[in-house]
Length: 194
Image (tube, rainbow, N blue to C red; front, side, top):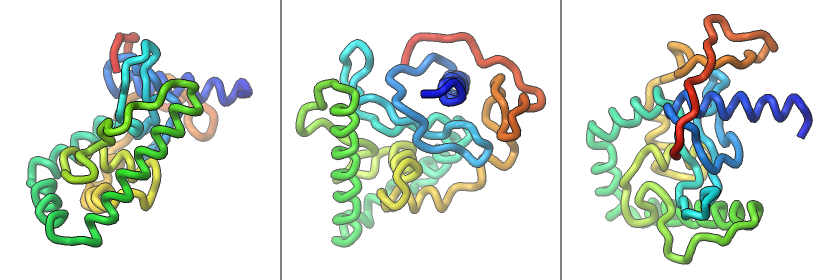
């Protein structure tokens, strides 16, 4: 990786730490960026550095997006999706395909990282393939792999433009023009956890 790529990785890691309020572990890459330019979804290793299994491959980090998604969940969207899942064979097939995609990608990430894949039968994310349990996880999958998750796409389309009011956090990193962002402040101090 060149110096510019290494700086971008450090900047993304600082942004994610500020978004989460703690130092993230097991980051492989930024899987999706908000229109504001900051990471919105990260891809994590299937195992944390200490070997602990971490089944969530795509992790939503943007607090503005997370808040907007929480509103959808509170409004009963998951309950309505779950009811449709039980009556629509085409939707069931698409959701099962999303689950299988997630598992394939997670196993490929384990191989690339040189770590033991998670055991067969380990959950994927968001309740797939039988339940609609977490829109955050389903939207993260859809953002990272557009067209992969039918419920993630549907929920994403129901969200307001959460980024319109500006970045979710201010971190000391350059904007797309190469200069510092106006009003940027250093990211919050590192903390343990993921």
